[in-house]
Image (cartoon, rainbow, N blue to C red; front, side, top):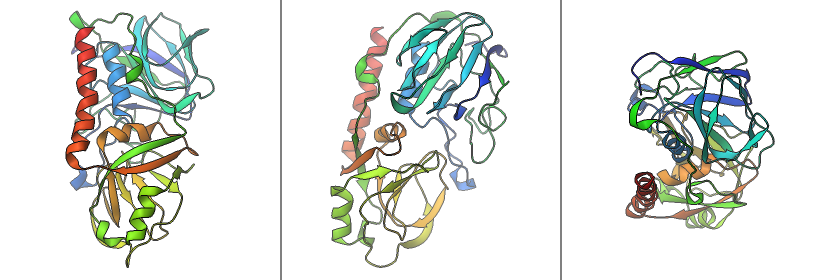
Length: 320
């Protein structure tokens, strides 16, 4: 990637529901009340970059549910991963998990959702927006980072860095095992605690043997779930403490809330479990009304599951 400034690459003709610039996020500032933000589905985000030969942390567009209409301002390579949102390059369908070559004046548009909820659009070189606290990610609810600290709007123009050398793009396709799957109900692995002693035995059994449905008011801050109530031994309140990404809080009403990329960085509700890193990406693609089940694992199993997918992905990358 060139260190020179970016070249005008795309123009937003219509913005979609929520289209933002994202990278891995900005860890390390939670003590200042700043959540890491970043791509909700990290695996699909990295896959989009690798398909076009970018460094893993290059800035992409995260496209939520209803996609934008985009005009290319110069020839460039791109890739699309994650959710299937009926994308087209001009009149040609763009299924997720592959690269494409766009010419000046070409249009990308999106149609009805097929599965998933978040798609990732990468362009060769990565989008050139300012680095704020070590990241180019948009922190939507705080209003900084990304493109002017906000979702994209009609008329916005984004530039991309120049891609050079060995990283130059070619036509490539992501193996099916690395693409998201369509489920009616997803199994979400969690590490139990830290407040499991605050729940009754019946409450813990309810949590692990019930189907919960993602509610429509879920967002980048967190997912509210609908399902059987989880009973506390006494109060649902604890001394306010740090909230990791994936923490499953159970407030007084007894139904879980999963805290995600733009959560409040501290909280005083009991946390029954924490979703493992790998399954945060699965959650990111669950549509409101779809269901999840929770399954407990220990820390070593959580590490094994995460390492397994990245080792397989890295092996595919080397074999290309």
